[in-house]
Amino acid sequence: MNFKVTKTEKSRFENINYETLGFGVHFSDHVFISRYKDGKWDDGAIEPYGLLPFEPGLCVFHYGQSIFEGLKAFESLKGGVNIFRPDMNVNRLNRSAEIVCIPTYDEERLLAGIRELVKIDAKFIPRKKGQSLYIRPVVFGSGHFLGVTAASEYHLIVMTSPVASYYAAGLNPVKIMVSTDHVRAVQGGVGAAKTAANYAASLWAGMDAHKRGFSQVLWLDGVNRKDIDEVGAMNIMFVIDDELITPSLSKGTVLAGVTRNTVLTLAKEFGMKVSERNISIDEVAEAHANGRVKEVFGTGTAAVISPVGLLEYKGKEMIFNGMKIGPVAQKFYDTITSIQYGEVEDTHKWNQHVDL
Ligand code: COI
Image 1 (tube, rainbow, N blue to C red):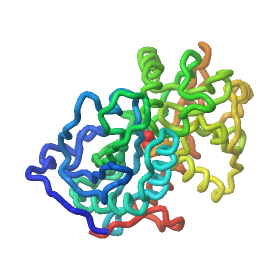
Image 2 (cartoon, rainbow, N blue to C red; image 1 turned 90 degrees about the horizontal axis):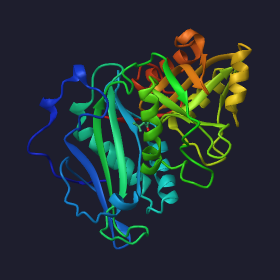
Image 3 (cartoon, rainbow, N blue to C red; image 1 turned 45 degrees about the vertical axis):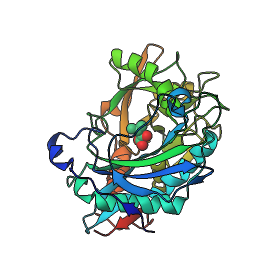
């Protein structure tokens, strides 16, 4: 597939200090952009990253019809670039689209657009292990109209951002507050979609948690506030005895994480007992009291693996693995990152390779 390419006149590259990258602060020179009008998406094109002309009546400003994705590209040790499991992300983007009534996008075209974008802005890909090029596709209603209805025009934009660790703590275990006052999603709602509303809904609880010295919130189900859904913007995993347990996707309140899927696949290959099932905060508290909870960690594209060292629930603290990263979390982190950076053979064919 060939795309029309308009190159930037002034590169942003020189303004980036790769020693102090942070997460999502800098953007590369170009975007892949496609517009939906009169019932169809155009072919998509590469254009300079920059301002877009929108009116105050833009649909997404008012009613939040917006979905996004997050995936990563790595400089491969074997040369060229590895984009990790982009087919999973573009497929999930379309599943999110269906949930918030956005027209789906041709997955092969989007994958080709992402590859072209990564190639054009390859100089932005960090060289250091632990850093990567974060790829952020976003799709939003871009008609101008105040009626509450699905928009008739949309923009799809893929931007890229050279990033370091998502959490300043890196792989150090974080302290998490179990939220009993706020919920992220309810059955029948939009919890399974990577849509702006879920992130807006998480901010209040996240700020409360920060004020109290916690990094993030553990989300319980929206009805009984007992079953565990997610942690922050990540999926959550528990190692209890020798079983790896993560909440199932069946209720539609949990995002189908790509890293979640990667970890579950690897865990089965490592010979672990793996369960996708309901797990309540009471079950975790009881197993912790009996010394059976070996490790807890979050999984997500941005942080990869984020060990949870402490959970606070109704004023009581549970500490896991002495607030240190455990061997299971470490093994998943090492295995996943060594595949991403091309240090070991990619037996699952998870990387899409881009030659430079
Ligand atoms: C991810 O880990 O992919 C996320 O979605 C986090 C993002 C919201 C920064």
